[in-house]
Length: 247
Length: 247
DNA sequence: CGTCCTATTGAAATTCTTCAACACTCGTGG
DNA sequence: CCACGAGTGTTGAAGAATTTCAATAGGACG
Image (tube, rainbow over all chains, first blue to last red; front, side, top):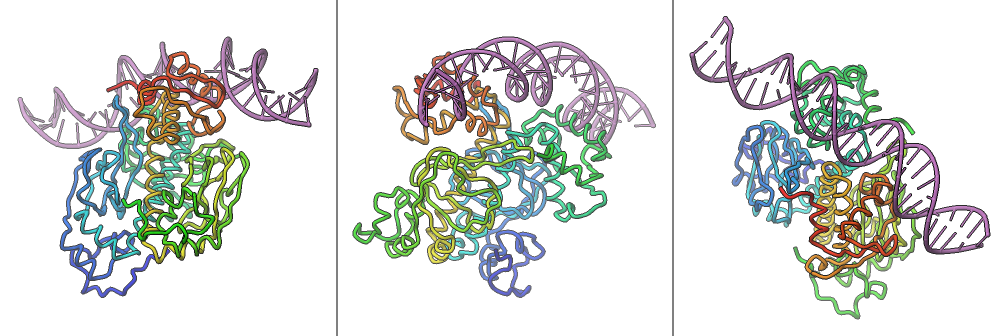
């Protein structure tokens, strides 16, 4: 899977707004030539959302796509009587927006403060038609989301509350620092969600999440200097706690 | 989303093995021209798997792709200590096999007797490169699987045992007969899974599944003439049971 | 007819939720 | 500077839902 754009881009050709953007390399924009990037940049708008702000409401027509520049976005489904389940978390430089689909199947909300770079549906749809590599990247992101959804299905269906919470911390740690698992020492990071969102993601109540975090702390697996900060004291033990008892 | 192939195909040009195949119209093969279909048909092999037979084991290298001709295939994940979660069910004419991915992330097993039409990875990968519509269809199937996975995340995380079982019956009924929901009368179908598979899909035990089916029967929502047959007596009530109490 | 596989049912045990009280932090305004 | 309130998180005790363990039943097949 190529992560290099198909054509060497001189920095001077790259639109100003795209320089220093993570999405240009690792995100979908990495598939675009300088010319295509310039075409897209003509229509982009940057926007910042506050915590809890809706980016799209369930059922909204999707008129624009976006790349996440920073922050964490949650995708949430609701039952008729108001129970909520977070079905996906997206980080920079993830692409937001459903290709082909006319409607969003869930609410899209800022979990933290979020910055995005958005552009009209139509602009990207046109570029997709002339650029197979772009189509490929969008498909690759969908496959990644599918893998994550299925990992969480296993957790939601078959793992205990303690395993789910450990699994979540492991997941976040890896997202924030992919090399963390290879290090021996302590790893520290901020949880980008409040307890209520963790509960909605893990299919638990906030009380249960809190109790399981306390248990992990008491078991010396993690430290919790404050509500949002986690220090993983032993990555292997965290992983064990996430996977459950060995076969 | 186009469901018509890009080029009119005279039946006489269609390879013998492809005639009367559901995948040729509704599946990924619908994107292929007669020439491409012929190219693919040169390498296809049909195969039948018995109930519970593995099509691919977790971690296997994927050397071949396949279309399901008939039957139901389950995608299952396992924890280290043997707990199982079914993370997807596939029906004819679904495509089996992960594009780009080198490894399967789960076990692929026959839930019923299954017939497939398989072909080498490489053959399809080559066709994908020269046919954007094929790429598009593969992406569309991935998106459909993602939607289903997320629907089940809501059920696994936030729905009660009774709601999950009703939700499952509703899902199967719709898959077998998409017009069923519009009919007023009774709808009858066979559950393609045994209780153990239903439990693994719903994140429950077989005992709980059995008890919830009994409750649905006692509530006059369904009849169970035998272990595999379900008669939905009132589709609306089944839907209500699946969605939970209205807001 | 006995055995295997599958499914159902009951009773006890466990896990998680619910309800309720309390603690901490942060910003605002007296 | 401190009091107040809102938002967030923790902890305890009681309750509910689901699992576990155990017994039983029915069908398919040799």
